[in-house]
Image 1 (cartoon, one colour):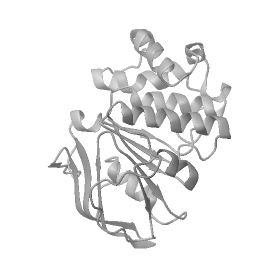
Image 2 (cartoon, rainbow, N blue to C red):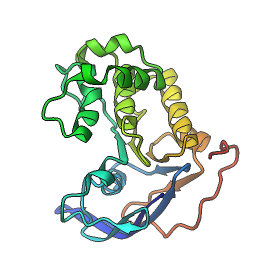
Image 3 (cartoon, rainbow, N blue to C red):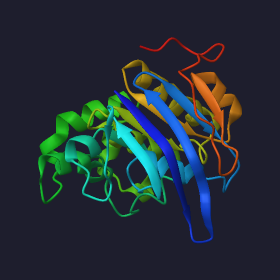
Image 4 (cartoon, one colour):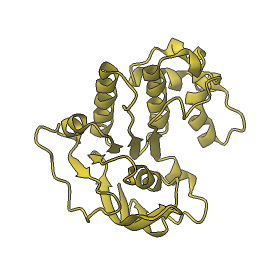
Amino acid sequence: MSLELVDVCSGYPSAPHLLRGVNLRIERGEVVGIRGDSGAGKSTMLNIAALLKSPASGRVMVAGQPVDQRRPVPLEIRTKIGIVPQSPRAATDPRQRLGALLAAPLAFADGAIKVRPERYRDQLHRLCLRVELDPGLLQRRAAEVSDGQLQRVLLARALSLDPWVLVCDEPTAQLDEQTKATILRLLTAQAAAGSAVLLASHDAVGLHAICDRVLDFPGSFMPPLATARKAPGAPDLV
């Protein structure tokens, strides 16, 4: 399965040509890093890749099929893209219990109107172990745990529906060095399990440590990409 952006253009009223002619292809089992200055358009590109934003022109292809974001994206496609945000605090309600936060995608996929974490107890336990989080923390509210613990919950949430692609926008930006290393290791493990990982970061050392390719994002233009090139020292991925 591949995710591909083809000649994507996008922007905002204040920067209408932020993205011009962006081309990107990422395959399952591959880790691709995106590095660039703040305001260069990385987050805009990631939102398009995650099907959260429609491009002004160009196409997004999933498994070789174009996705028409002018219409509701089919559930079987939307649930195969997991998203890990930059700021766990900004992405969560501080009053929400972690169990409900983690169970929400599972309930959505089941068509449930109300999230009932107890229905997914075994799945939530396994997800916690997968991201090295104490399952006992699921009873706490988001405001009662550390940034690192909350980001692990959001990573587990992104993994809950077995995504083909993980889109990660600066997922370690606000974390201590130990937690940052753990998150990067978990992302590498997910790629080894068969997901594609698209990762934006200012951390050049961290990107080169785990990525098959690291792409510099020069403002509003990104050249077409060739096939994957393994970075020196990068782990072998399935």
